[in-house]
Image (cartoon, rainbow, N blue to C red; front, top):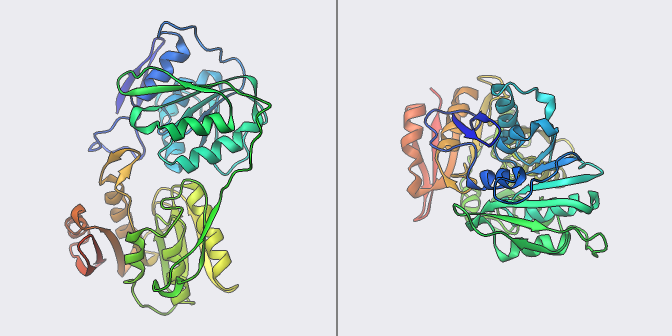
Length: 385
């Protein structure tokens, strides 16, 4: 936990789930830059926050916690960001209802007077969010985006220009930058191009040739990523009424492959992204038969599943948290899998060879075998004994 100090107060903040080994803070220089701009402590006039305030993409709830006195609406695609926000409000003695939490799948407010946008890693997610929010923005709306310099590109600014109105940027401070956008109510907007759909290639098992739905923000929304493709070629052949989990499901192609290969299985698709779970559900419904059994969960890994209730976990863990490289997510997924698996249950993982997941799996499960590998990827299997 760290303390963020503003001109008015100090706030104890942490990421979620809180991990004393995690070296990263719950905010960065981009959040600080935006807060200084709102307060007017950067030699500019303070921003009036008396109207309807919407905070988009607040990564760990830092912005929402500091602005809680203005009763903002927070919009995020991240379940973990919502949990972090609630935890940070609580640790700072703020009522949970001070911030209204909406997901990227929810209907946004009808009117927005102040729109604060933390620029996401995914340009597609930003595009879809701006399209969804534009009808609520009026000529007097204050629109400010924030991000680290490496996160803001010409394409980022063009999206604000095309969907909201004229856009300019600030000078960089501590490698962070602000985006100022003036809404143009007369701007002609095309509809959002999301979701995207594409057909899977041949040679990837039961899902070959199937159509995949990708809502904005999904990893590799334009094509099948090479890690998942390698995984699809080496999934376990199983039969019977297995309980299978596609952990970190993305658009759900791994879980769909397991369901098509074993019609008796019940597959649970889990991701912390609301857009991912929506994509997985649409992909599954469009390709699985009417008798196929599946559950769809937005959550913190396997925390919401009963202990010792699962036969097989399939996992392609992310190794980035926003711009930071970390094994914390994979580590949490592996521990959660061990708790959720029955005795004799199996965790199958695909990952970049250099990440060394075999070491963590041996530490967690006491065993790990290599199922397949090439110069870039490995598929690993660990058994709960």
